[in-house]
Length: 234
Length: 313
Image (cartoon, rainbow over all chains, first blue to last red; front, side, top):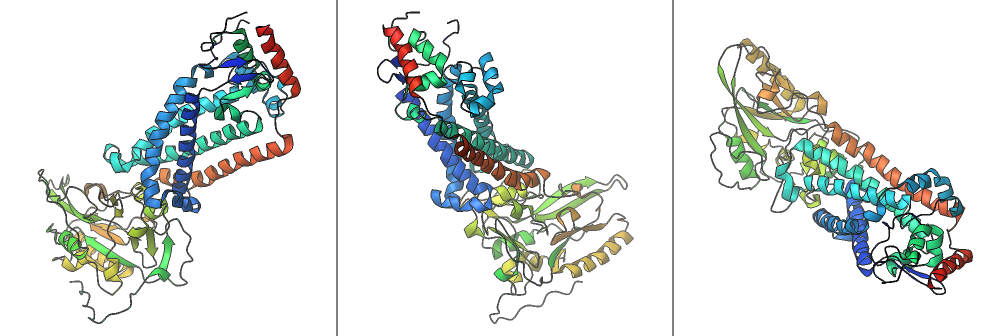
């Protein structure tokens, strides 16, 4: 193998057995992920409540309109820092490489579940990388535009025209984030065996073989196997 | 002199307008009443204003509000801007007329214009927090206000202010409570020079015509009525000596309209956004329906075992 194991992350490890078990996410990464996930869902619900009159009823979930308006930006702050933690953990393994272009070009085969026609994938495929980088960019846009329209504390720092632009940008970015989130959740549901990676932290060897074969090979060959202390054999 | 409005009876009378007269209600759809009430308007004649601030005092008093003692920074404007308590404000501008070389002291009573096409109401996400009555009054209903500040962004005149105390938006109500029982607004009642008059919108336009003719006869050849068509007219209008340049009156916008950014946000974005979200969800659902789950096969597990086994062998 000539590929660099840049995409093996801390804690990733293979445990031979029947079936083979592969550690994919550490407890820290999982907790970090679920704080982000819960924040994002709460933000989407409270944000949509203020976005379309037909969804205003969602404010009851947060204790009324005033409470929804007051709490939404604070959840945003939690999400921003929580996602920042995920970014630090995952950015390196999400760096774009040539294989990702090939994978994207064969999106038809991806959606048709014809894995045999796809190149061997590292820890993340191009779809996951697109989700990761879109989320990174959009969350940055959302926190900046969000602070600009957080009138309770920051109204003095912008003029009306800037606030108008910020609120439009904020809503467009939020819609895009929700769409990206749907892709993310759907992919996790559609590709069976995935959700366990974020709940128990493990996937089966077969799952890794089918969807992230290069990552599995790297783990088996011991490259970048930083935590288990296994001796590299290849 | 404009004939003063008669004092009303001291006996209780039913309000002249209410819920049944709403033509718009924020974040809700209402069935407008079959017949519109006669549109009312306040006419502010800047050429007659002496800057006494009686209107500001009357507004505070009628609406039972207090303004904090401010600081003088060398201008007459007091307070320095509209606030959650000061719904009206005299704005003083010193302007040198390039034609006459005269210094003109322009005083404009600022406050809600009660637009026929209200940007605040259209931006408001809280059902019933902003209402428009068929007589033209745009009113804030504070128990429904959530304090988001969208009305501030929607307003072409920069009028609403959010209270730091109760996080609700405040602005001139055109004294809807007084108008409902046949009175004029408190500011109009207090004005000593009839720079503020109140009545039906038609009457106010007629009265303005007379004032404009008078001003023109005195050399103000650009005197005119400010009833901007960009917001479909307003229910607070100005007589300006220099109607060709409203900006000189402390930045009164020349052609106010709801910002296209706000229109885009509250229009296309709202519908396209929910459609996009729905479409993504539907595509996911259909894909699963057609393709079924992407499952790991026994063969995959065997291959993994072989690979992992190679390593431990």
